[in-house]
Structures are given as structure tokens and as C-alpha cells.
Length: 301
Ligand SMILES: Cc1cc2nc3c(=O)[nH]c(=O)nc-3n(C[C@H](O)[C@H](O)[C@H](O)COP(=O)(O)OP(=O)(O)OC[C@H]3O[C@@H](n4cnc5c(N)ncnc54)[C@H](O)[C@@H]3O)c2cc1C
Image (cartoon, rainbow, N blue to C red; front, side, top):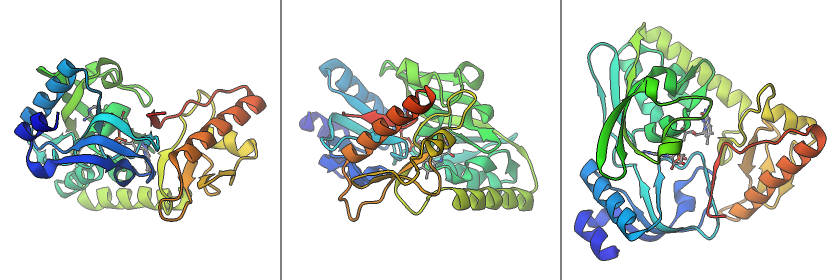
């Protein structure tokens, strides 16, 4: 595999046994057998095709802000989209961005261009690819609402542009979670706005975020999805679990919906976080008969 990767990718874009703790916001996770950072769609398509034909596991990683990777790491190829990060402001309120562009950067570009609508996204960590896949959202907006189209690589061969209306966006849901497609690019439809007002709204939302969320600790944001009719954080708090700790993993005192990594210098294991998630699920179910579903993608356990 390494020979084949070297024929396709720049040498600086191939890493062997790369620790994923350095590429996830939880700051945990063992090595990726091969960690690669392709620079163009053609490279992505070739790698996908090799993995498909050779039956090699392939995992697409954006900014790693919604994943928990086991301490054993991941076999096969972890394809990180970080170098596919172009953003272009088009006419008529459209912004197009490659999968690896930071969502917050898209929000900044929208502000600079006097385009409103994307303020909600300015504090969400992660990439455009991850945000479309998850249909990320906060406060008064979701990515899906503004998504005009998504260009995906399907079956490693066909590049198809799908209208936003056909992406099956729902709460933390998109068609990408079921069709296994690789999100290459997304185009967002925004509307003209006043730059001062856009900036003021972004600042206000980010202040609210800083006040209510434990941003000073590594985490993956809200650990659990919102169960219909409830808030995960409230259920966890009402189960008496605020501050509950296993090893270096803790239910945040500031926001019980966040599991945080409180360990010093890499001493927290992914297993601590995994065990904590399971214990929270068990205790909330015991108390309220509600099954919390992780929003975070749990990998390699
Ligand atoms: C402090 C903090 C606050 C957060 N706040 C919010 C919030 O307010 N709202 C919210 O919705 N989320 C929030 N999150 C979670 C997270 O930031 C989002 O889910 C984000 O969209 C994930 O993007 P990512 O690039 O990091 O994806 P990753 O974590 O790298 O990947 C997530 C999933 O997307 C898939 N994926 C990534 N890129 C592609 C691609 N190009 N094609 C196909 N699949 C792909 C991955 O395979 C994986 O299954 C927060 C996280 C943190 C750490």
C-alpha cells in the first residue's frame, strides 16, 4: 500500500502510524496505520478506489471535532481533508467551499462579503465536510438550511452534485451518513446583510458559547444527541452526574452535555471517555428510561 500511496501523493502527505490524538479535539486516540492528506479530488478518487478494490478500511477525517477514536487507533487509511480547503465567494449570495475548509472560516468570508445567515456557524469547530455530514447546527441555524448543493464522490468513481433539498438533512443527519459518499465541496446560499450586524451577531453567539460551554477543555462538543422532547444535558444533570469522573474523563460541571478530557498531557485514555459515556447512558436510562444516543462518532472500539 505504501508504494501505491507514494505514487499518488506528495511525500509530505503520507504519515505512517500517526497518532490520532493530535488530530481530534478530544486529544485522545491511537495511531492511524496510514494517515494521508491529499491535495485534490483526483488524489482522493484514486485512494478511494485502491481502498475499495483492496478491501482496505478507509475513514474520512475532517477536523476530528466529533469523533472518539480508541487507544488502539485505526487500521487502514485515515484520509484527512485538511488540505482541501478552498473557499470562493460567488455571485448572488453563494459561497462554495471544499470539504476541508473550516466552517468558521466560511462564516468569516461570508461576513467579509456582507452575506448574512451563516453567523450561527462561526463558533462551530470542524470542517465543511464534517458539518454537512453531521448537519451541524447551533442557536438559530443548521448547515442544511443554507446548503444549496453538495458535490460528492460516490462509489469512488462518480462525482455528482446533489441539490441541498435531496440531502435528507435532519437533526444531525444527512444522506452522506447512509450513502457512504465522500463530500468534496458544498455551496451555501446566503443573503445580503449589514457587515456590522453580522459581526455583532457572531460575537454575541460566541460569547454565549464561551459562557455556557467548557471550551477550556478538550471535548467533542455535545456528547449526546438531544432525545425528542428532552435535553441530554438536563437529563444528565438531573441524574446527579455533573462532575462525574472516570480516569481523565469528566462530565463537565459547566455543561453536563459535554464530556471533557481533564487529564494532564495525554494521560487520559480514550477508554476513560468511552467508559464514562457508557456509564452516563446506563445511569440516565436507569433514572428516566431514556436511551441517550451518542452524537460523537465512536471508532475502533
Ligand atoms: C467545543 C465544540 C463545540 C461544538 N459545537 C457544536 C455545535 O454547536 N453544533 C454542532 O452541530 N456540532 C458542534 N460540535 C461538534 C462538531 O464540531 C461538528 O459535528 C462538526 O461539524 C464536525 O466536523 P469535523 O470536520 O470535525 O468532522 P469529524 O469529527 O472529522 O468527522 C465527523 C464525521 O463526519 C465524517 N466526515 C468528515 N468529513 C467528511 C467528508 N468530507 N465526506 C464524508 N464524511 C465526512 C467523518 O467520517 C465522521 O463520521 C462541537 C464540537 C466541539 C469540540
